[in-house]
Each structure stands twice: as C-alpha cells, then as structure tokens.
Image 1 (cartoon, rainbow, N blue to C red):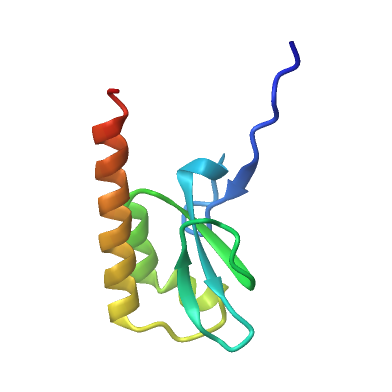
Image 2 (image 1 turned 30 degrees about the horizontal axis):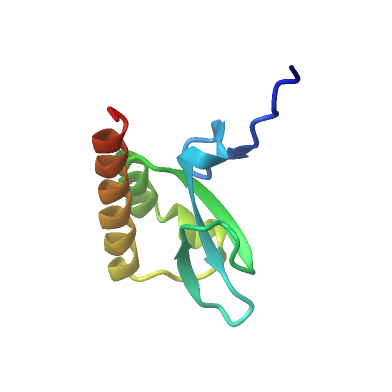
Amino acid sequence: MKKRKIPLRKSVVSGEMIPKKEMLRITRSKEGTVAIDPSGKMPGRGAYIAIEPEEAQLAWDKRILDRVLETKLSDEFYQELLDYVTHQKARRELFANE
C-alpha cells in the first residue's frame, strides 16, 4: 500500500518544518485584516505557527507576525492568539487519549 505524503509547513517562529495539521495559520487579507484561520483556507497571505503556547508567546515578544505579515498587530490580537493556541493544545491533549 502506498504511503500518503504528509504536508509540511515552516513555522515562522522556530523555522522548523512541522506537519500542517499541527500548525495554525494566521492570514492577512488584501484589505489588511489579520485573522486566525483555523480551517487553513481563508484567502490572503498566510503565516504558520505551531500550536504551542511558548511559540505564540515568543511571536508576541519578538513581534514576529508583525514582520512576516508586514502590518502592525495589536496586543489584543496577540493575546487572542495566545488564548486560542493554549485552548487548542489543551483540547488535543484531552482528546488524544481517546
């Protein structure tokens, strides 16, 4: 049986190649709106980070997403991102046992 190829994406924070399913996409639309893209299908420029609270915190501390998406992001957006990543990681750990 043929093995399926696992799509990989590069984290803008750590620079590691990680399976796409373990990543979170953040998009910037043509209008300049930045949003968290859980489906990975929203139109616009995308940047990936791993679903790890430490990585989201580092992106906030170093303002990495500001640079990558070429826009100025508010602290509220970074807080929302950190909360979302923390929640998703907790859900994965909770449902990994089933």
